[in-house]
Image (cartoon, rainbow, N blue to C red):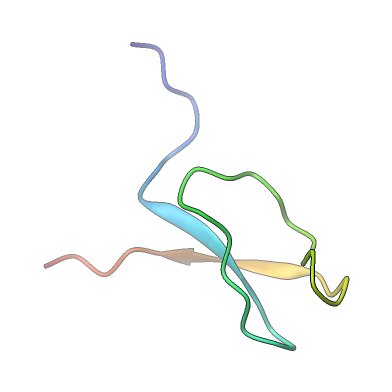
Length: 44
């Protein structure tokens, strides 16, 4: 319990479209170093 990070969200790079794993708080793209933006999971 006590999860503080929403695992239904991840980050996507605006430059190369790299996506982090859900729950990964990384906000800088490991491929190209571009700032990544948060993407919410689409609700089914």
